[in-house]
Image 1 (cartoon, rainbow, N blue to C red):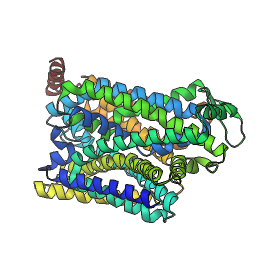
Image 2 (image 1 turned 90 degrees about the vertical axis):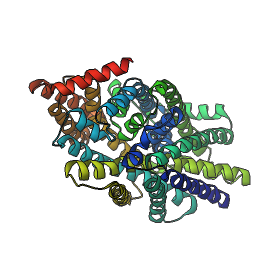
Image 3 (image 1 turned 180 degrees about the vertical axis):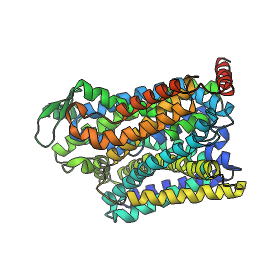
Image 4 (image 1 turned 45 degrees about the vertical axis):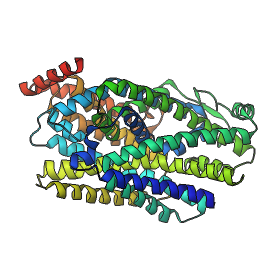
Length: 510
């Protein structure tokens, strides 16, 4: 355990050091929130995907595969892989060009407000409010993952280590801002990759080889099928319908509305290198999710062989990576150091997302609500201070939500992902590609998408059967319909807005 602790502490010190170094490059709020739009292709690609692959990559996704087999986890991964590629292909360059042309917007609410010349900042206020609603619980899921990690490892009180982990994330993010978050995300993506590969190698070896893993999976009803769901409680399987497949793949729609990913597109330095970033990001996402699912399958085999305890329920199943790494740590000093790297990888998953979410939520409050909506006139120094204070407040709220140690990381992330995908996704796509869309349509889309996520999640989906559809899909479609209908029923956007749209089209062809 000493070796594990040394590795984790060294990793955390490195993250804080990066924050201190990057803080010297923050000359204004634009630098703090968007890094001066100077991200290179590798940092852009890996920071975008690392901030996307939160703690569910090494906890939620393997946990789902461990319990129910490859269907649910597999179709989720396929949907996310497609969504990742399409987001880079059709959104990245256009958003970078449009956000810079459109009054140099530095946040997503900024862009919506400037794109439609919403001088009353109604769009900005509602978009900022949506970010706060969904990012606070999203960030909380990361803090909860850290708490579960250290509690499982060292037996330390969940609440103590959860708060300490949050403090470290807060320190380097509040000091270094966007550049620190992006730089640490690059390092964290490397740590995650190494952790995944170590887990697979050790797990297969301990389980008795790949044949033993496959044999165990085959012995479980529906476990390896993409059209059946394994029921761990009864040992039987149920059909995974076409409707369920479409619903699960709808995870991919969420990418078009994720503020912490879209901000990376806005921060790209050279649009000519986006193709390189797209290739790096897409390949990494496919490999990392595939390996994460494999780890869940390997973990099930280790449980069947008695190497690790049986894990029941989603909350316990999400610790399968921790159990495997703990088993590794019992095989000498070198193995313990490798195990420490795996635990650092879990922290990397969590921190790479939490820091980005904290920044996006902080910018929404300080830049969009205080300065934009309420028109609080702050100096450059006061703006930086306000940004950091707001970041602390949001982190504190996230800690409160994460206080329950039995909360499911996957479920929290699932709901927050649906919230952003259904509200920002349709508005972002129509803002970028439909000249006739107007501010009233965008406003209708934000509200309709947000309301439908809650209605479907808590009122419709519990009905089961054909209604058991991931809330992102119906909410996305309702929001898109609302934008189109309301835009067509109201006046066309001002000529200035239409001219700017054409200007962006010309720049895209250049």
